[in-house]
Image (cartoon, rainbow, N blue to C red; front, side, top):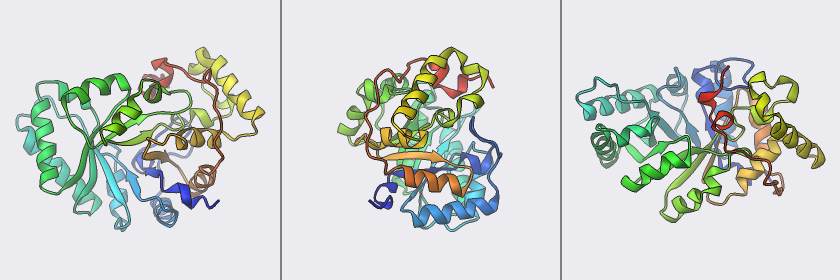
Length: 294
């Protein structure tokens, strides 16, 4: 089967375009020349969504140097500053600045990078600001980028979202196990999954895995043995696990070069593999990269 048939489910993450990002990143920030090549390959491969954020260094500016007409752009709003008095004015200015950097007229979606603020005193004004910009046609969808289903359950009780971005991978199956994926899908929410490779940890050979992960060496060894027994590459396993989840709309993948994107596009077509239940964890020390000690 042609891998283009499935690559439409991929979205290209662009943190690496503005920052040196990811545990497995050996090359630092992606060069301007490589950004152009990656966008060309994504466009030719039926990848129509780019995922960026205002806080990803100069990622938006790097994207804005290219013609983005073929892509849906998703960006993320940083935390509202504690001394901000006019929330609506601040949000509006952030969105206009983002559109200027990207050289586009409208974002496909804007997500909150720290959605816990919706549960704080600033929350109502923040949500209203996003809704107003959506009504004005500057945003197609509004949503949140969360760390866990636990954080999400409090938010969806009080607010309506068009899209939710959350981490999910072979080790982190909380979105599936809590029923959150199917719950969101029933209410028509688009689901974008990030951390497909757990910031590259799931792709690394054991000799390159930092000492910080020693407490989880049994799990990591079991995973690598299972890959060997099933003649699967880490890339094939990670992508086939997410690809078989029908409720997922987009799988966000970050790459450092064209070769990596080619490998991902080829691997997404791997026949679905039954992944054992013992290859997972609920330990935040492993699953949440913001807790990792570099």
